[in-house]
Length: 454
Image 1 (tube, rainbow, N blue to C red):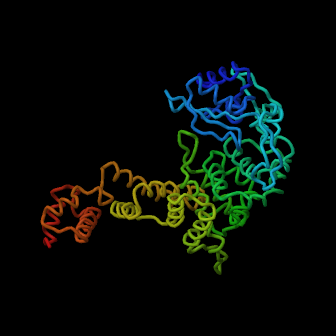
Image 2 (cartoon, one colour):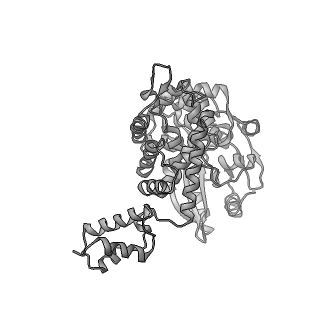
Image 3 (cartoon, rainbow, N blue to C red):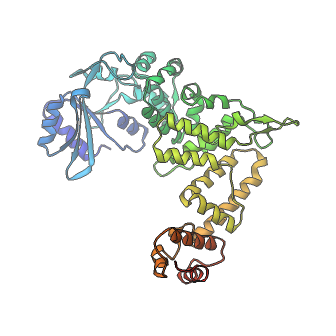
């Protein structure tokens, strides 16, 4: 259950006369019976003593945050994947700024260390033999599927408002319910999230939207999440007044997010998940009703792209994620005709990797429509079938897929310059139109027939 390299570290610290325990998420996940990826340790030893003990057993110090947090991180030089983070028992003063403790006191008792932790399910301690110390009742909460603060919830959230979003993320990850008093305190303290950096909020929210229970967590905690994305609150109970939609806009959005595939690590693609959450974010602004009482949202993709870009900017999305999310919102309602040439050109224009995500988002979107969306879903399935056939054939989608290269063109007597790019683009267009095959001979022949060396 406990890896041997972790046991070896614990044995060394215990052998020097100090307490040492696995703490936090690793213990929680062991009890839940799910894979553990990281092991954090806590000890009664001061950081300088921990450093001496682990250095003497051949471990390499890679991070030293002893002064600020009482934490040191080591790796085993013989296997860099064997990484261990060890923090000294500590207690903390008031969080004056709502983000950081005024001071950290090292050398506290285990009970004091447990009292400063965020949630009961994260305040469990396990010794090297697998025995569990449970000062806050975390084991019972895990078994009951409950997320509860360790101590008074208002105090915990005023100390560090990011804990509010951490509770949402733990629900998204585990499917646990948030204890009512804790949940009410989250709502009451949600305004404190304004004190938290955009980068930290992005990290926590990304953990929510990519988790298996993310849609449920967002719905259950909408008053909290809408502090960051207010447009989501507008979606609740929003009637699109369309025969293609048999549920309110928020439910449609979250059903779309539910339809995003989960990888082998139990997570969803980041850009695809954010794209699903934001794909219809522009609908309320675009909404109008015709003389027959039918709702229309013409132009909602463009409006949604503007809103998504604003949100991505406010939350400091990484540049590539921001670009891809906005592009998904832009094109989520745009489809090629279900025939070979149209699909080829569509994929060539937008990019193969992007289109594979876009097609998945579009199918998840349409599956969250009423029964009147079935013809569109069947059309999307047909487009996917055509794309897969083209892909399996090894078809050409971009200039780099052509059999001829710029060097081949220059060998025909063409000088370096813009003309080379024009020739290759023309060849690509002919291949996409299936006027010539993607072979070296066909492409060289086309160039010789249609262009004169400069």
